[in-house]
Length: 524
Image (cartoon, rainbow, N blue to C red; front, side):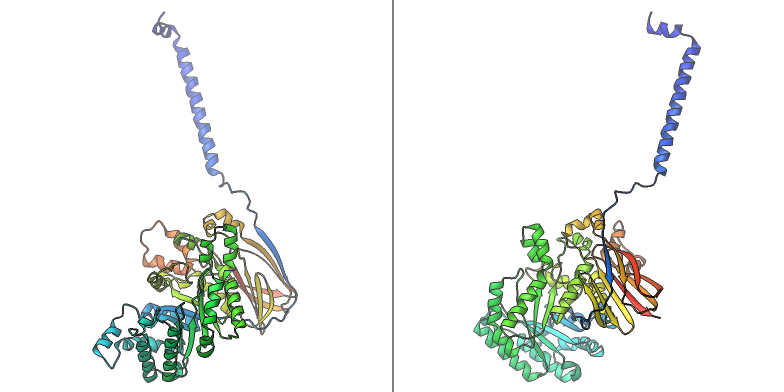
């Protein structure tokens, strides 16, 4: 019997029944699958395993006398004085002035290298210097806001260049212009900083001393400083030799000393990863300690200013942005305020990067800290500066990662969560979360009364412009509304509440990795 004959010989019902059973089984299977899918969709997202975060209990139960809180002099840098004629630059500086975040303006050069007015004035032997006429707008701004000015000059590197050197001619014209046309009560606070070549020969010394005497003759009140070329990583032997060679010059002519420091060059040259990370984060403190030690041995007692400095950063733009360093920068600022007279910041990254790209051997993302991003967006360094500038009065409690001050009946408590790690780990969210700090505080030094408590949170999500911009990466262009939204989002988080305090203030909070919190207690 053939297969066809066999199928035809079977009862029709049996075939239908078999088909019906098969259909029912198929339908039931589909429903079960749909039910399982529905249950899966409706289930809440599965959370990762609980991350073990650090925790700390902080008790402040007595006041200690640590003196008044001191903050270093803040110097804001431009590439040249010509930059001050820009509307954007004046707007950003005005904002800093009104916020009390600037003490002095520093210009790396007097004029932009692209400015040809100096050459034309020399060729035509003009008795009126057109470049200074254009700079009068900048002088008007400085005089109006009573903002002191420091200008940098670089001396030629070889004696053969002195004959063709026009730096003194330019300085002379500049000082005469100030003496004749600018408010003398402002001019008397002018500071000039001279960067001497590393090979400080007798010919260089004679040229500098001649320049110094001529400046003193024109404007006796001008403060003159020397910018030391101390390399990074610091070479103790050659640097000490250089400093000893400059000893007499510094003692006789300098009113202050400028220098730079960058731990990134230490990190990138050290192949021992763990050791490099640890040493780089303490590099600035050690470099300053060495400089003060040598100055003490040579009986040099001059104010020290760290103009260009940084903390450890990422090697690329992305890692540099992801690596939030709020607490690291703040802690460095607190240390610098104790060690030196002042420190510098670049006004914005546009001026900073353009200047750095024009300098051989420098890296645009590791030779200074900028306060503003493009379109005047605030960068984390600005918030760090703002936080320490809020602190006033006597220091009544201080620890490794906290500081408390008292001014009259008002109290302030600054907390920070410093974490040192390789910037490349900033792309690992689980790792960053594990570096958060759960902290409970118990403050027992507040007099009984009703207080308004203001809490400011500064972390990756509140004050880091890179993280706000990251939310819009899928958009090719951002319009005005979006940019305004980013401005609003790039702010510290503010909590305000009233609390009746009888014997202590207890509070629990979480500080993100390298985050900062500031509590202000105002008696009401």
